[in-house]
Length: 169
Image 1 (cartoon, rainbow, N blue to C red):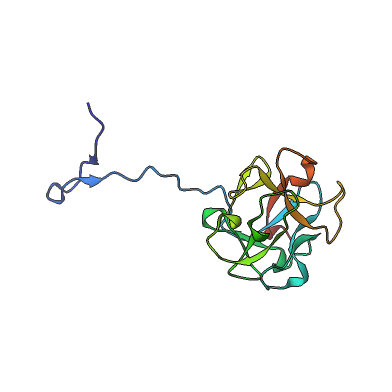
Image 2: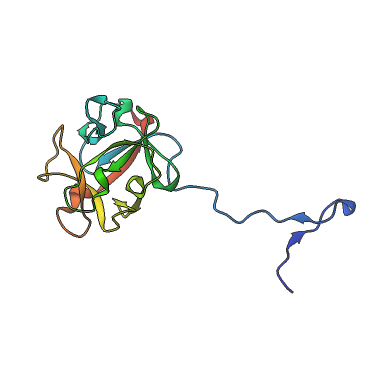
């Protein structure tokens, strides 16, 4: 009684039928663009002044539904801008330290553009103990900057994010 390598075929002359793959078919990420909202606020990640230039700051703004606030999760944990295709959420100058700016940059295949989720935090693949965080006090205002901050220190609520489908507007 070993484990089978193929299922018997209904057509004997066709030979054995390969078994289907046992890989997961669902991704934990939505296939459609999403808003990345700071939990318990109506502030979402937004491209400052809707500029598609490399180095443009990503900040918080109230959710008005613009494509400059929509992100698509790509392979290797990258977030691509819907407004600026080919531009991704990136850590400025690959600096793994508190306060490093989060900005928009062309695809470069670097870990500075790769992210994973840990609870509701968005954690850097390059800087493993650092998360995307809202800069400043607990209250969120239009234009608040987002930067890299230690996942272990600082205000937790500034680092908790929710993904929302664009269909809710």
